[in-house]
Amino acid sequence: MPSPTTRADVPFDINDNAVITSTISKPSGTAEGDVMYAVLSLGGQNETPALAGWTTIASQDRSFGRCSILRKVAGGAEPASYTFTWVSISQSVGCIVAVVGADTDAPEEANPTPTTGTSTDPDPPASGALPSKDYLALAIASQRRGDATYTPPSGYVEESDIANSSSSIASSSQSVASLEFTATSEDPGIFTSTRSEPWAAFTIIVAPPAVAVSGEEGLIGVQLDTQVVRNPDKMVGY
Image 1 (cartoon, rainbow, N blue to C red):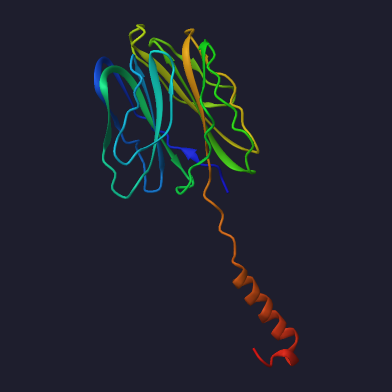
Image 2 (cartoon, rainbow, N blue to C red; image 1 turned 135 degrees about the vertical axis):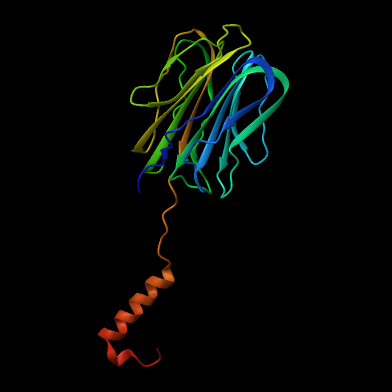
């Protein structure tokens, strides 16, 4: 089964003024059953954005700010955009990545504890042991202060790289990168940032749909039919 993959469109929202909402468009082409991940970084506030219908799957303080990841499985009638809210005014950056071909019942095969540090090289956590499947890894880095750009981990494809224009400690920057892989573990390696600042980093391993296995009853039925054909004397009682 092929790995889950991302939609090409990754819409984003950058608020350089202090606000309490972030409105992000639905990724183009999003269809029912897509799994959407919203990544939002707030500067100067240690709060987690919220929106009805979205589940927070990870959130981490990164010193004078916080990065949060929320997930929603797309239904048959999604709005054109989503408005996430929080309590205290803050500069913010955010994006939505839509994933095609993921398990809609249990999308994350692994979601290890976020890592933190202060440097130019945010280092997302390793996945730990995984069953052998075709996966999609999302590596995410968020830093204090805007006006930064990132180079994604080696082998990863950059999905989004956004930042506030300000370099104040109340601003933010973040990057999302992806990798389709087949293995029993994954360690993304480091992002390289143009700034040395406090950071939080995440790894989300998105699973493919579960494979349906033939039931024992069906297999028994096949075996019985075969037995009847090969052993006509034993047909009595069937």
